[in-house]
Image (cartoon, rainbow, N blue to C red):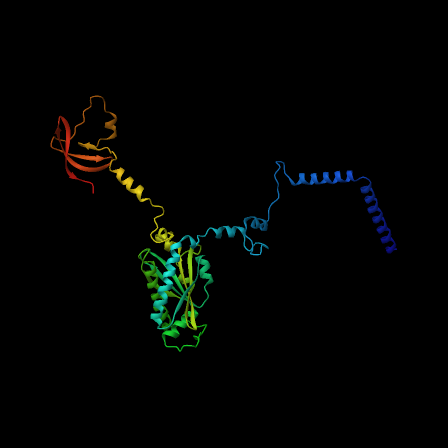
Length: 369
């Protein structure tokens, strides 16, 4: 019985679809009008009273509109708000002279480390990037040594990170290890006093070269402060502060490692104007002709000069009670000195007299520097 009912139902559905098709073929206009009316009703439902759409965009659509997508355009790889916040970070490319400084540092370090290790040392600059200080501390591969140094003239700090490969390579080279053998790495143990001492000596060499690299721009002394192995104890700025990170590669034939130099933007702030220059000695559009013209015209500027005979101080109540005919007793005498002022600035001390029938003063002393 169930099979018969299903067959009857199928026949009924087929007959109904056939009738609908025949109605559409006989007169298509009413069906088209009905469809148009249905779409118009749907459009009116999607709009509110003032004619604006109430549809809310999802996060993927917002990121797509803002341009925050993956390299293949398939979707967003980070939240739009996070991308907007990160986009506000200052890029090192806005400090062109800093690249010149790091280029000088690489050349100086190649020579200094060759003298320091008595070996063939090659130093190369991998990249320069901007990074949040907290993100950098979390990305440091351990074990490593973090050297905190202070810029004396700028009154702020910087950070040098030496990875374990470079540490063992320096120790191996300075203690007479044979060439052609890779430096032995023993992980899971703290660094010894000898290793810390040798790394500190190398850091002092790097700091001396860094000071010399900044000398053409600004004289600064970088002083070694302390050596840490835990990144938490090397915190020299707030986690959200921006910093400039330069990654250096140091190769000693078949040995070597990485050295990272991190300078917070707050440390570079005293020389920010100098680092903004496109080339050494740039004057940012300085017009010497206009400066000379302005200096020449200043000499012909008229200024008002007052000769003050005497000054007295009275209560405001007495001043308010002055009337026509009130006399004010001054302490000045015919031989009293007169002060010449320009505004509120005293210029000269003079003696009062007469010349050609007019009251005159003769300058006796110069007050302005």
